[in-house]
Length: 302
Ligand code: SAM
Image (cartoon, rainbow, N blue to C red; front, top):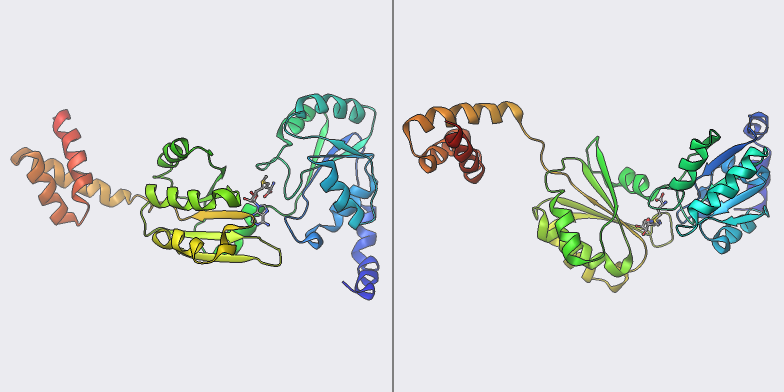
């Protein structure tokens, strides 16, 4: 950004508006920070970071670097996954004394696959105010550019690291109709793609959103059957940070389900289970295996 651009931002009419907004004391401000491009921070986030008494952060080195880039030097308090409960006590005491404290993580929105939820929970339980400042989150950023058309998404976050647990867990998601959102580390991205391909139908669409908002950002969409080959085709593709989006299962067609069931029931009176399922598949165009399973259940109940 040029010096001229920076000074014109400082002179924007909205800056005066922001300074006149209310920033209550005795409040925990949950502040989202950029996921790569440092200039994605909001004006309000910068303002709040400049006026708080302290910033509770996942890693003081990372937050110190971020703050320095904006010319900010507020005291930092380490608040990571191993000390969240204890640090919550300290923060509550300071908030009760009337301080304003910001909570940030290393990147993106605190408490989303990041530390912060326990602190927020404790602060709320103490009857103190929590004020969120929205900003970047890798999941929503990836969804917005994926082109996957679905009004619903299911945030999974990180998958279990062990292969068997990962596969078992993925199996529980087979019927989810919402777009699924996974976070993945670069050293596990190939394993993740292979596990998805082993568990879900290979024609489902998958999106790899890599290094979002950074210099080597890449957003690739393909059928699951091509995912592993795409990752392997270029060594760089297994590097960086990833959000993986997976198309959901087709939504159940309740009207057609009811019609198939009605036909099955009629056929089961006259035919054996297998024949009833075959005939119902021919009449309705639905999958024979699913109809056979349902026919077995209906027969048992007859
Ligand atoms: N709290 C963050 C948020 O709101 O998105 C997520 C933090 S989580 C510890 C880090 C994971 O988020 C990474 O492993 C990756 O899956 C995803 N992620 C973060 N930044 C990303 C980026 N720039 N591009 C793609 N994925 C990213």
